[in-house]
Structure formats: structure tokens, C-alpha cells
Image (tube, rainbow, N blue to C red; front, side, top):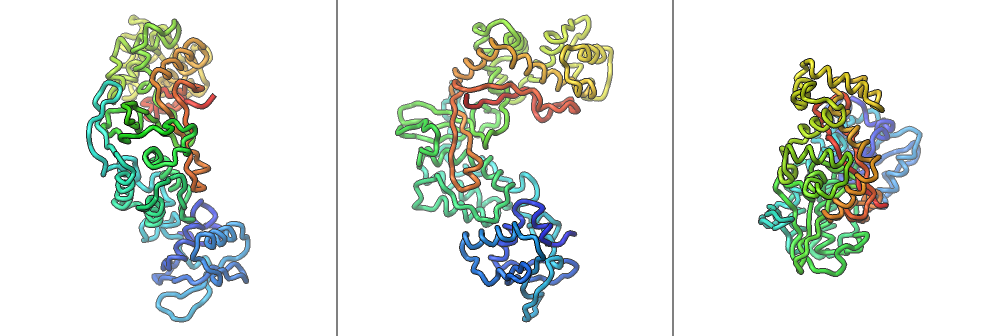
Length: 464
């Protein structure tokens, strides 16, 4: 077990902040190679004892954190060992790097460990909303709805408090941010001990709900541009149906208008082509010009419906393999009777004459990536994803059709500014689906994973 030395403190973001926070809270630290606890009274950097300085305020603690972060000398801690009443200096190496710092001590782990350590999700923050069905895009969508900002504030605080993995310091930050008299939500004061990992989780999952705070309470200047202007909101709605994959949230306006929003933390993850775009292509098939997009959509129409593609359990891989084998590799039924069976055989680590025909055709395919050939047959799914993305990206007619289809979908993508988020400022950059630069992504599927668990074909929207 590593000790709480200066080297260990600097190894991972958030450890120095955690040390200062625990010192400020009067925490009793575990000792390395001893069952005794250590009550810290000062952090000593050679001859400079920072315990003499007040650390009650955020600015005072931040000053101490910055001094430790840039310090290169020897580190000591002053305090009391066990029940001793005599204060003494101990080497940093005598304290254990317990769970709060990413170690394996007995103290409950609250932060710096795994990338999803907080178990926070948008759905955990909206449980106090009214459960009802709202008409959206011609279908009844089950949602948690909020008609006023106080209802949403209460729900968020309750969701944080119910979460056993949520550290007290984060709850305290949000209680200040969402206090009863607060009516503006463009700034939040972060505790200096929050690790980067926790900040990212809060931004990724809390950012969806905070768009509702801004919409209901303001200031709407946090939206760039302000898409709501001065219009009044009847309800802020968060879909809860797991089968619904349209948008993350939407605002139901007093005038009956609906403003759908897809949230991203920073650039965010690429969105699913099969869920968000292909159903619209299927509905607009007659207007799509000849080319790879029309060919792909024709296959989808033979194998599914737009409504089925919008829900979970859609035959995405079946469509991908049918298009890949027939339209890309040009193998007919005499070569491969059932393209999807090729996938199933490879997934079950079996081979066949048809599997060999597919892999040989991929090896001869013009422009195929070397890593695909290297990892055959497990790379067959990745090959189809990559080549479909290449075909669409390089075809100007296909890209124009896709942009027009996205414009018809007409939703807003809200990107939470990460740098501002870390600085305690809340700003969203919004871009309409009809005014974007579009890039199709086929590389999420690893060439070593035939199941492509990380995703098939995706896309990014960005400002032109």
C-alpha cells in the first residue's frame, strides 16, 4: 500500500484537493503499518508550516492547494497520533493512501476511483417530477415533467441525497447552487476538493437537467444563442421510456411549440446513425438521390420500419451485414445465402464456406484498412462500419441529403462548455440540426470485437 507522500499526491488529479478538504474537516487519517489514526493540525513543507494559516475559506484552501501542487521539497504532517496529547511532526510516508485518494484503505470510496464512481444519472435527479405522457413527434412519450423551477430544484437535491455514493461536499455545493431564494443558475461554486473525474460525471449527467433550470429559471443568456428568447414555458420534460431515443429533454412552450434538445458534455459522444438518422431517411426515401445513402436506406426498408428503427431492438446489425455483403462486397445468394448468419458464426467462433468468402472479399476490397485485414474475421463488423462511413462522407449528394433530413428533424444540440463548467460557469453552445457540419463515424467498433459493443455507425454535428 502506497503512503500519502508528495509523489503519490501528485500522481492523480484531485488528491491534493482531497487532502486539504479532509484536513479542513478534521478528518482522522489512517496510518501506514499502524492501526492508530492521525489527527492533522498542519501540513508542513520543509520549514514553512501552512497550518499557521487559516483554511476556513475557499480562497485560503485554494492557495494551500496551489502551493503543494508546485512544491518540490520534503513533506511533513503535524498532528496527534492516536490518543496522544502531544503534537508531533511525522513524515508523509507514515500516512496511508486510503480509499479517498484511490488506495485500498477501509474508508468508503467517494470519488477518485472509477470513471463512473458517483452513480449519478439524469433519471436519478428527476424522480420528483410529474409522471405523464406528452405528445411528441406524433407519439405519446412518458416523461417526468416540471412546471416550475422550485419543483426541479427540489428533485435534484433529493436525487443527490438519496445517492449513497454522492459525497457530502458535492451535495453541499448543489444546496448552495439550488438554495430556496436562488433564481439564476449560470454560476456554481465548486468545492476545491472535487476531482476532475467527478466534475466530468456531474457535467455529463447533470448537464441534461440543468438545461431545465436555465429554461425555467434563467438566465437564458447561458444559452448561446438564446433559442427560447422571452417565450414562456409550460413544462420542462425529460423522457423516461427506455425505448424512446429521440432527444434527451424538451420544452413544452405556452404557445404549444415544442423545443427538443439533445445534450452533450463538451463535444460529447457521437450519436447513433441507426437511431437518429436512418428512420428519417426511410421516411424520406423518395427524395434521396442515387448513391450509398439511398442504397443503405433501401436495405433498411426491406428489413424494418421507421418506427421499429427508432426503438431498442431494431435490426441494425442485420441491415449492416445485408448492405455490406450485397452492396459493398457484391456477393449474391449463391455466395452467401444469409449475411447475418456470417456474423453469428464468427460471434460463436465458428467458420464456414460463407465466412471464408466474406473474409476473402474484404481482403481484396479497395482501400481496406490494414488493421481490419490483420484482425479478420473478428473485424468484419468494424469493416462494414468503417466503409459505410467512408462512402457517405465522400459522397457530396449523400451528405447534402443527410443535412436536409437532419434539418427536417429540427432539434437543438446543447454542448455544455467544459472549461467554463470547471470554472463554475454554466454555458451551453447550441446548434440547430439544420445548420451543422456533419461527419459520419465508423470507427467506434473495435476491429477485435465482432459484436461492436461500443457502437456501429455514428455521427457528429458541429458548428460550421
